[in-house]
Structure formats: C-alpha cells, structure tokens
Image 1 (cartoon, rainbow, N blue to C red):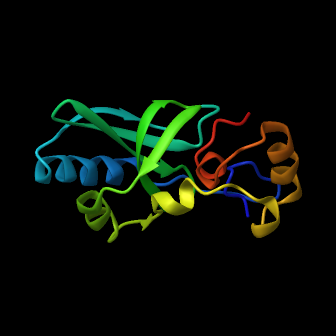
Image 2 (cartoon, one colour):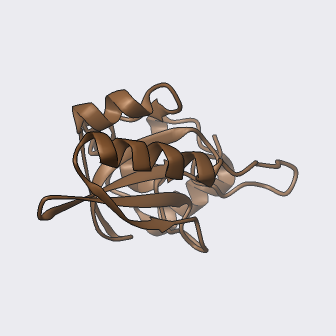
Length: 142
C-alpha cells in the first residue's frame, strides 16, 4: 500500500536518503569500471531517484523508490520507457542497503487484485493503466 507515492492526507511518507544512493552508486561504478554520469532526485511527477552509470558504450540506470527502500537496475529511455534488467554485480552491491527488485517481478504484468493498493491508488491505476509491476512502483503519475 502507498507504493505509488500517492497517499491520503492522513499518511506521512518519509523520503529515502538520496545521498546514500549517490555514495553507493559511485562505489558500484568504480567496481564495475563505469562512470556516474547523472544523478536525478525525485521531482514531480516522478516518484523515484535515478542514478545513471556509463559502462563502455551502455548506460545503466539505478532507480530507487522515493519513499520505500526498493531499488532496481534499468535501461532508461524516459519516464514512460523503462526496461528493467538484472545486473548481478550491481544487485549484490545494493542488497546491504535496499530491497532489490528483480526484473522478472518488475517486468511481469500488473494485476490489481494481487496487490494491496489503497483506494486512491486503484483509482489512479484505472486512469494510468500500467502494464507491469515496474510501471506501478516507479511511476510518473500526477
């Protein structure tokens, strides 16, 4: 519940530590011979932090949910085109700090009945029509 970042007024969510994400991200980049090329804190309407690492000619993004310790690696084109994938070395480095969500779960079809979303979230789900679990957890709903 509240995973979309949309809550009722009586629930207060606390933002995750973006500084820790940056510290961990720079250490990961060093270990995998990559370079951090961008850090983006959540800004309306995005509900996640994003840290971009260039590895050779490829760019991998690490996404951290704004309010929950859920993190994932992805290929990030824009907020509407995110492809989640598993990068074992990165996942291993992130596990001491966060709950790493794997690509199989994030890319799996979203079914509202199998989740504990609030009424407000279900209303938004019907409006935004997410296709995958990842689109619900890491979203740009306003």
